Image (cartoon, rainbow, N blue to C red; front, top):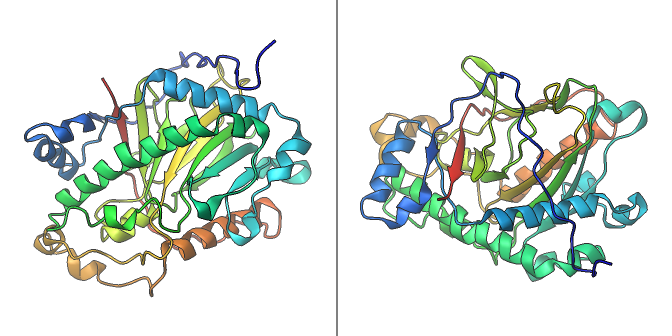
Length: 348
């Protein structure tokens, strides 16, 4: 008999053998940031719109998180619903169930979001999550401290900011703000479109290796599949970073479609980390020598009217809630202008 903390081992499903139109993502090893001239090398790649890589988590670390997520979604529905997120007010902490009945085609995924491990976000969790609380915490803090923050310093270097801590200072883990780890499960569905084209509202989204194809990114040539390879993290630039960078770093437009024939009967389990600025951060463009030199600064000096990261996120979450719940029957207009920037990371 398994103990309360023992989990069934999680195995990745096999990759599809179908020939798909894959996006051309180049890997960038962010471990080079600690090497001589590594920052300059990576910055040159970013400036030329070449994709990025690197991180420091083992395969065992990631598989353990998948095992926790898999076990969570196997809990009885009434147990999961004790921890419902209040998405109506733009709060994603906790559980979101899949839509049913006439609304089933709009939303066939389940999610459990675990927020930052700070007093602001102390809340009830299922016993399963509490039994693995410390390892979830270690995993989340590693992503924040060892992956997110070095990338933010790299982006400040790319924009030629005098203070390379500029973006880091807007992502203090202890400050108020909702950053979270997500376990996500798409259930098999005949619906060809599982998640419509959208951008994320945060800073960066980290998607851990998940072999069931279905994630697509919008490119100049149209929608292309994103290949998930072992040892890589796919990273989306999201709205907050687009605004803060004056539009130089573009929010990734992406969607999820029904997997190919050899995978479509399998659930699509996901492990995702959403990094967000502090709640009170105003989404205003930085003053950048690079933007000035390219003649772009003047065009991005328009402000969002003092909109904060918290206000932006809550508005986006509540808008999606209204559609999923059938309160509105059409997607409300997005007030963003994301394009096609997605990056992948690997470790050696």
